Image (cartoon, protein in one colour):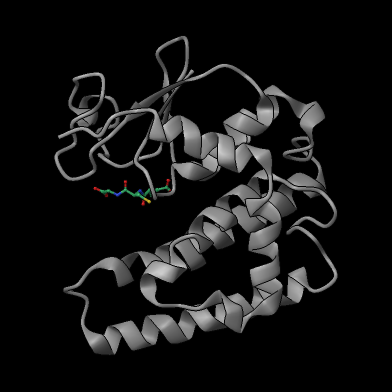
Length: 205
Ligand SMILES: N[C@@H](CCC(=O)N[C@@H](CS)C(=O)NCC(=O)O)C(=O)O
């Protein structure tokens, strides 16, 4: 398996999951501006959508969209508990969280990185985001992870998105439950190991 990644982006979520699985994988760095990769290709020839993450399987099939990638990966090693079994209510609830993170949180903060995003729209997005965070706070009060006691792929994704907040001058300390959650996941060996693997791959022009 080969993960196409760009540091500091949502591709970190499947990267954490790969580390949690303990399976071998290759990494290819993508320059998200030029679309050049560390293997010398134009990333758009791998993923015509032009954005990370993309997971290339041994068969050559390329899977994109973070929520799909992490579920595929989790199902390779069901014994890890990274996702409840397909067809169960637990799996549907995991997908409920993945959808929420993807469409309400990830897509809610993405435009805030764009300096051209108008201030008025910025305020609307920030207010909406604060409401979405209330949902997460309510869930994490009394639960270590989104699905309860068990770390799942949804936590890998949410942790990754929360990693962007300091860059947007959003202080997670305002939500102690979230700050504690981030700290809890930060302590997982998979997070440090994924960071170290990414740092080993030279930047691409
Ligand atoms: N719908 C995609 C969105 C992926 C996405 O937003 N990727 C960003 C990094 S977090 C990216 O590579 N952006 C570069 C671009 O769009 O050119 C998913 O959920 O995986």
